[in-house]
Image (tube, rainbow, N blue to C red; front, side):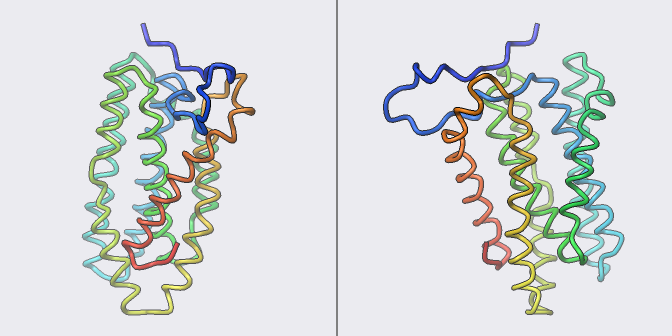
Length: 230
């Protein structure tokens, strides 16, 4: 039997001085969690594949195709986890398809460089978020999910391609920096929608904010690593 999902403790039980909750307290059911992450990884693969198809250099095509393959491997890993728990991957992923696809359109970018940065930024934010959320899953499921999310998705290759593009067109830096900032809000909205809503969810909003601040801090470091200002 799957473990019951963690619930927020009543606010009266919070220790004095506590200013945040652990995201694990808002983790959805294991199969719901796995279905959403499995489809998110598949959607990232599809977005990255489109970027690969319009890459300006053969070297970019080669580097990004390797990254796409690694993302697809992550997707397959989550499908295997769903099947391990006796779930139907297609049914579970299908329930998230409309929302995730709509998100993909919003963050698609107007140019090839914007599309590639979008993949890098949104995937990083969402994977950081779901790693934090994995702490509320049953032990074996949670550790395997965190391991899959931590696997290399070709980040170095993506950063290298973006860095080359910026060096060869310095004007891209300001445009991409602005685009990177715009991506944060929509990405965090998608992340927030994955939180299990208990009776304490609304009153716990102010406790959740510091968790998202940590995600934004990681985003800032991710942008810095590409030579962009968050």
